[in-house]
Image (cartoon, rainbow, N blue to C red; front, side):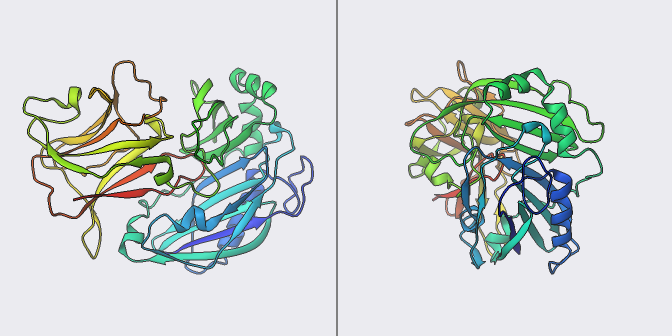
Length: 392
């Protein structure tokens, strides 16, 4: 696996301009810059797979090594790079963003191009052994970028009552937009994208989606949340590691008591289990995903559960807080988060200290297989690097 990061940096901002070499720019300008640059990178041709823009109320210097270099300990980085995202001082309605990240893929690797005020600064490559290659997601479908630009989409987004009301009150909120599934998804928030753990922080946010092809608001996509947990992976900066956001005790192997049911106790009676006590948490239930890896060489593989299994979080009293069941014979992993929540549990609630992460491993003993639990968060700009807990 080869990952190349390119930062296109700033030297001063022009107001509301779409100037490709001096200020915040819209998506069409960012695409021209990034696609042109990608054509010069060895290993092509490259297929564009994601587009994301961000505006910050305060300038921040981003450590690319922090973002990508810690994705997997088996990865090797050649070179180093920091880049600065300036504070945004323009008008939300123009759809310009100070920073853009565009991802490209092909069968041999991935290429990331960061566009900030339209100037190339540097790049670095990342590669490594089989565990590094395994961290690469399945190859994505190439994006269609023939629809409306972020400028037109932003004008539509800001006509939505939730969004316009929010931005009129929070004129310096951070903003983020991504192109995914044929939609421009806008997020305006008072949370800090560079959140640094230390205390649970609350904020507010307004969301809306715009159809990229038709240039119209996606029905039912807007929402306004006056109180949210800012520790739900709103991090663009140093790639705050998951090990700082969720601290777990050592895994303890056991058996699910006879007669227990998954929907009530998070495991099926008689199944093998692992439990991990939560020591510290800055994450909400809907900000986290788990998967179990069988790290055998030369290529790591997922662990397929024998008999149904799954993941759950138990409260300090042993009641089910959140859970996801995995059918027999399928890889033991979570897709988009927990599928069920317990009584009086909201998906935005923080996972609490002394709660328990419970893994139902199925009917086959997992002892001696060298398994690892990968703990990841669900992010909007760049997800925090995951961590791995050994399941002995």
